[in-house]
Length: 368
Image (cartoon, rainbow, N blue to C red; front, side, top):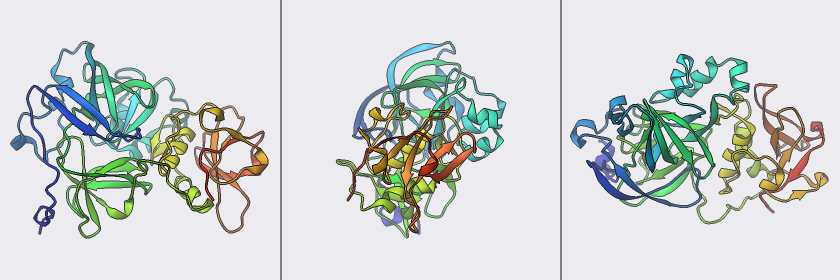
């Protein structure tokens, strides 16, 4: 028996031609509901033709316009892939990046194919990455590339147009959840085919129905409505206040999940990240948004004495990369450690706090 026969028909596909529509949406990088007015062309020609079909390049409204750069009056759009790389220039990506610029993305294989130099020294190509569902402002278009601004992260860059859509949202009520596993996959039905692999920790998903044999339906931007995710991979998002934390092991757990992941400068995914992303993904689990690129402790929280450092504190230390780390409790009566994405090691590592030279410490989150 199909899930729809159990009453999970909450997520229907809206269709429109030229339109003006008021849509509530959840931006994974915001703390509150964002209401957007969308003006533009339909992403689909008809519901019957495209329900359940994958994105096709020539369906994007951005590709139906003049190939030269044009202004789009800051119209909103939504990221439709698990993690879209934000590039410094249009078409700065190469054939080696094809797994990061398609639909769906294959970030694990893309990162595996990058050289150490490409992972560490990407400032001339990569700004950051934006998670599934991120609401962005479209600034300009150029031959299949779209310049966007993320108003929360205050970053601007370029993405392939097929990784964006105008907002097609589900009907009915929903509850915001965060991915709490390191990564999950979204499927077309419980236990079915994967329609979106590699959805990373701290991606916000909208649950639009009840659980069915351990799976929950989630609303997605674009044609695939709904998708299904294992219930165990999600946790309710703290929406009003910072979530209470029971103790040092609980606050340490999300960061420890990321140990061993590859270092990628600018990366924000379970397949490659930098230290700023590690902090952002970790504290997002507790309802506390941190800056994507914290430059100094005063941007996060007041400084505390180094001698009082405890799990959950953010640790800045001097090295050529100006790294930032998170203090953690690894259990077993072990001394305090820190977790950070190390360019030298090429991955997220855990090291004793006492090995950090000249640390500066701040405390963004309190617990008993």
